Length: 467
Image (cartoon, rainbow, N blue to C red; front, side, top):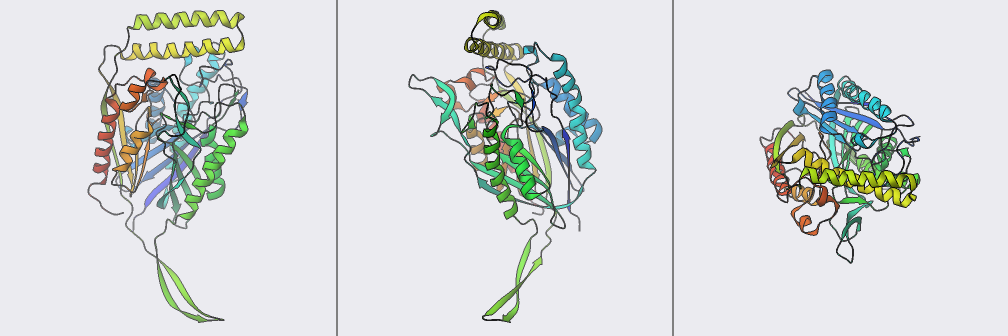
C-alpha cells in the first residue's frame, strides 16, 4: 500500500550582532546587539506518487518582490519543484533583521546586504534537506484555543482609530494543528497555525528575536518531538494582548502559552486509525472487559495544489511628487532633531519619516495602475486545506472563508509568497486608521479574496478520492 511521504529540513538564519533591525518606525537604534533566540528557516516537503509540495516557514518580517523572487528562484534551482508548489511564508516578527526597508539604513547596510545574500541558499538548503528526509507518514489535524491575541483597532473617544486593544472587536483564538507521524508513530512534523501580530517585542528591543512564534515552536518540539513549523494566520487587525515592550520575558511567556496549547492538541491526536474490539472478560476482583486495538489502514490522503493570480483593485493615490516632497520634508526634520532633539522628539520624527516613506513608496509602485497581481495558493492534504495569500489580511476575511469551507480543518494565512500590503475589510474603510491609510487596496479587494478563496476550497475538495 502506498503512503503519503513527508520530510523536514531546517537552516539557522540568525543575524550576526550588529545587523540592522527595522520593524518599528519609532525605534531610535539601527544595529541589533545580537539574538535572544535563534531564528530559523524550516521546511516541510509532502509528496505522493503524483504531487510534491514544499511549505517554508521563515523567521522574518517579510521581503519585497525582488528578494522573494531570489529566494524562490534558489529553492526552484535546488529542489526542481514547480513554482506553484512552493509556499514561502514568513512569521512576520518585528524584532528580526531589517529585510525590507533598506533605504532607511544608515549604519550597517553592508551587514544586512550580506545577510540577505546568504538567505536564498540557506532557505533552499532547508527544502533540499527535507526532500532527502522523505519517509512514509500518517497525519491528523485538531484544534484548540489560546487567547494571547486581541483585535488591535481601538477607537478613541475623539473618533481616531489607533493600534491598541479592542476587546470587543473580531478575533480568532483558534489554534490549528496538523501532525505528521512516521509509520511507527514517531513525530516527524507539526504545523502550528495561529493569528497574532508578532509585535510583543517593540521598538525598545535591541535583540533579534523570532517573537512568540519561535518560542511556541520550541515548546511544541520539546513536548511532542519532531520539527514544528509556524504558519501565521490573518493578523491585519489582530495583535498581542501584551506588546510593544522591551522586556524579553513577555514574548517568552506568551509564546509558551501558545506552544503548550498547540502541544496539547498535537499529543491528543492519533494519526493511526484504530478499531476497538472486545476480546473477552478477565475475572479479577470484578469481571474486567478486555479490548484490543486493530489498526485500520486507510487510503493515502489526497495531495493537491492550486494556484492562481487574483487581480485586486487598488486605491487612488495622491501624486507621487507631492508624497515624495512630504517624505523629504519629514526626513529633513528628522535629521535636524536627531542632532538636537530629545529622545521622544527623535522617535516621533522617525515615525513620521517611516509613514511618509510608506505612502510615497505605494504611490511610486502603483500610480496609474488599477489592479495588483496577488497570488492565491491552496494546498490540500487529506481533509486539511492550507490557503494562503501575500500581505496582511484582516481576521474577518479568515472568518468568512473558513465558515463556508468544505474542509473540517482550514488554515488560512497571509504573509505568503512575498508582497506587502494591508487587506482591510470594507467596513474598515469608513473607520479609517493606520491599516487603511497605508493599504494599497480599495474597499472591494477583500470581497474578491473571500469569493475566490471559497471557490478554490471547493475546487480542492472536488473529486474526493481517499480521505
